[in-house]
Length: 218
Image 1 (cartoon, rainbow, N blue to C red):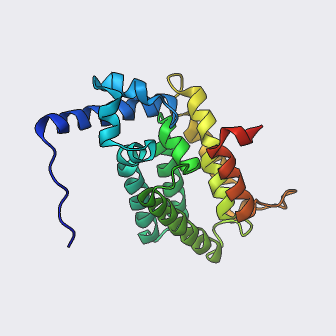
Image 2: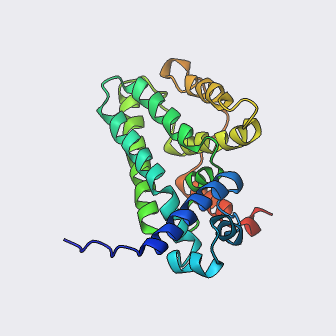
Image 3: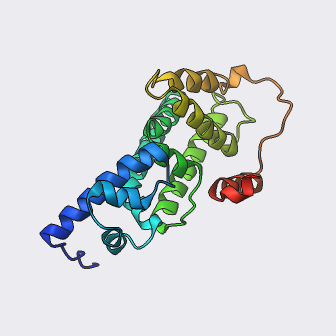
């Protein structure tokens, strides 16, 4: 067994906790590119103290969002245990979107992983794999339309971000209406021919890379 990590001194633990709380608020408000200088200022510490605890922005992101990522994995695992596949499918999509609501940083992270931190990548991959298993099960049972792809579901999650951003503080649950309007179109008995093919995995990967690199959005 790996040894437990050394405990921080009381003052160092206090600084760590203050940085995590400040970063959580800053990322929720401004997204993953929130100023680290402002995070340190909010926490009442010097920027050097921030970097002693979190050598890179990615390490800070991992500390902030590991709990929500674990909740995403737990939701996907729970969905696969449910007997009613359609109810499980709806529950999982709503739960994933719910975790993003009012949190621009987590919204950014579910759209792309610009830091390639191992634990983040592992949990994101786990959610995608479990979600794909659920999708395929629903298609075998003929409750989910047969032409729906994992890439379509990825775009569904992305589509909620601007709605959440625009309606935050005005109608913070409006995204749920839009989500369920879209989900309703995923029923097998709603399927009609669609004029555009889904993204390929390669196209989705390129789109994610564009989100990670603002210079490539031009």
